Length: 263
Image (cartoon, rainbow, N blue to C red):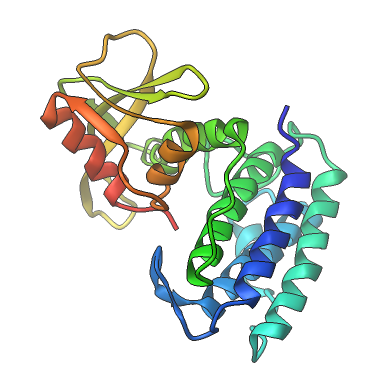
């Protein structure tokens, strides 16, 4: 079983060690809009936000907006940022240690307003940003435990690429083809149905966006194959595309979703 909270501590410590060795002005290869200093601040403010969401008992969008408005100011240098990151990581993990997954808590994912969502989301955020930090520091990337990587694959598919389905009035229109993600080291296959998310946002703007949904009951017409870490890193935009074969239209549809990116 994955100890998500302890791994948040471990991955954040690895992140801090790596990013402290980087030039603060260096561009992060996997997040080219950020410098190493920006990356350090990003994870710091993320941990600060979610620690305060849990501590405040936030349950509504209004509550979350109040938390966002009260975030700490950005320090002037990387050393001070990393000191604040350490403090905010302690605050976040202490809040998580006090709570069970089923406890209600606000999140941006409308269909999962629980502490468990925050616990899972913040583990994968820490893992991927640790990879970012190692890359910007020019260090070898620390392997992801296969069980954590499988969890990351499912989180990417079911949350990061499926949030359109939590918006009122949006529907998923499936296209032809089924794509298998074959995780070769754990003997697991995840089936994806490509399609489009269509709907009208609160502003009145119409959307027609590429999407995927996880399914269980149709035979694949195409597939990507690699170990769990390779698939996980690719889905989150932190690694190269794995091997593929089969229906190129279905493969391109999944590529389109992946290319939209996750930060």
